Length: 464
Ligand SMILES: Nc1nc2c(c(=O)[nH]1)N[C@H]1C(S)=C(S)[C@@H](COP(=O)(O)OP(=O)(O)OC[C@H]3O[C@@H](n4cnc5c(N)ncnc54)[C@H](O)[C@@H]3O)O[C@H]1N2
Ligand code: MOO
Picture 1 (cartoon, rainbow, N blue to C red):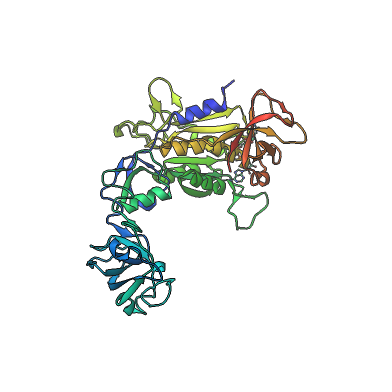
Picture 2 (cartoon, protein in one colour):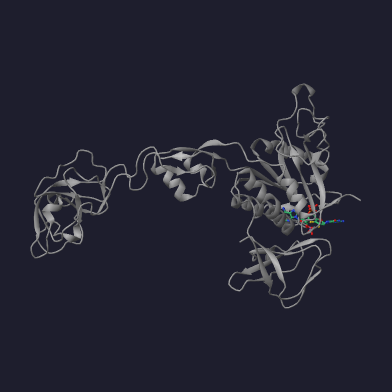
């Protein structure tokens, strides 16, 4: 009897065969979610110059000392300093410059008083705002009455108060989220060296499959796997390409995979891995793997092998290790798991692109993706945390759960963090997409457990 793989052994085999993608230089928007592979230092201080944190007046401290609304300091307004101003006004004794948030503090000025602490130049009580320069250019001149004193540096953001030249802005290994991309932009970096997002091609197989939105014929169903898995790949951080369902024909499938290899760091198929007469993925790919017969690493050995072309590139992974080194090939195996029993895994094509062949049942495909494909994507990205979080929770169910002996079961459920409970959603069958859409957790029933009573503590994988 052929080997039955445990979930853990299969995962270890899969992950042991993939390594992070080589780094590339990417434009900032394309680097979102990617892992940085360089230490980024700050080239020049931020802010680059002392600047105002308020709309108001740049003043000298001595001029506004002791100022009150009753006895204001009356200063001559020299003009405006707007954000982006270059030619700076010099503020002398008894003078002020109207200044906007972010504008450089003019020479001579030591502090900023917010416009609300002044009459705004209008000669009345406290101002609430400045009038637009276009509508009231006269406000940039004349006099302003300042109602409160301001200490040195008040409402001024000093040069380098954010980051200083030579500081470590971001360390290698940082995952680039929105604030990190913001910092890179702020220090003037247009591109950054990262591990790229893996390009994942998702391809479903089955002659019964119809594209959503089209008319169903007798015996047909809509292709849901390619949509769910492409979305899951994107959610994991990949660039996902969804390929329309391929019919159960080995030559068509081989040709489609060959076409797709050019844009794939990882291939994921669904369906056709069981023991039926039309299980096309198995038929098309299980012959792949004979390195001796395929020295050029053609996608499908036997398809015009060219012994002159040299050996295959350094492998991304392999499932067949006979001591002569890794070789391309897809291995179809049985896992001690429900759902997700039949699985294929290996490498394909001249670059030994990893391929995971998932079972066609929609819940099986999705659970397999969560457990095996998502960690592969995140490994390719160079992330440290490749797995979904796991917690332990008490089973909230009216009746005991039953589970097949010797298979690790992944039931769908909803997790209540406050109560520390998990409630099953739907049954264990692998066609139940309705229930899957309402689950945010996978309830793990271990291999040796055939019945779990209400209240039993079980491991839960959080997928929400
Ligand atoms: N005699 C046996 N039959 C089966 C076994 C077995 O051990 N012995 N294993 C069963 C298990 S477990 C699974 S899982 C499935 C896996 O089958 P395949 O991977 O070959 O998948 P298909 O036969 O192509 O499809 C199974 C099922 O899923 C539907 N399907 C397929 N693709 C899609 C899609 N893209 N979107 C929506 N639904 C899809 C398909 O119509 C079938 O109903 O094999 C069992 N059989
Ligand atoms: O193992 Mo299959 O994946 O039960 O449905």
